[in-house]
Length: 199
Image 1 (tube, rainbow, N blue to C red):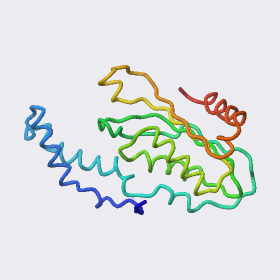
Image 2: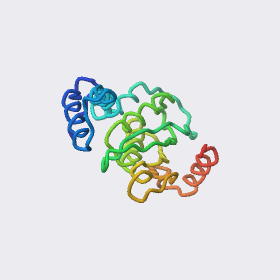
Image 3: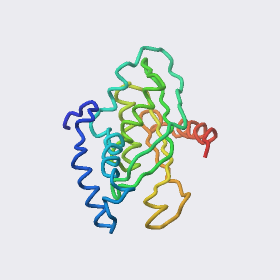
Image 4: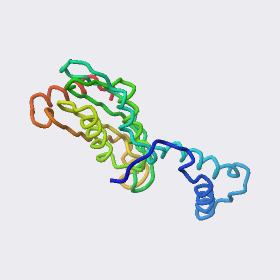
């Protein structure tokens, strides 16, 4: 696997994005030099540089500052915001992620778990892949006894086009270690996640 690098805004070719956006405006019948659109290509390019920054970083790096702690009890953080783009139509999906793990001598800061989720979300994504990437990274980097990740999101590629079903929510989950092996433990943790969910 090719080594990923930390985020550098210069890694995104903003000038090329701006040219492409101008072409899109022309293609949909708009006038890219009218007042409201003159700055749109530049604005979109700047937005994309931030929205797709995850392509130029390795989110596992946020767990490098993990620390020793002998607890082996569940650690769960719910309702981490997720904002990403579906790779099929380049339309956004938004929602939340819930990340739980059972440590094996190493724990991570809560903010670092949030950054891992954000790092993978700021890419062209599939929700299924995003869920698995977070689970694999936390499990592998922390050497945990088990990880469970649940992502709930509304996809504008479903609400604004296609089936046109606004308000529908896709739910994906990934379980590793003890959560994959122990159905009762997995069910108990899922109950905690959904009991406290704000949906």
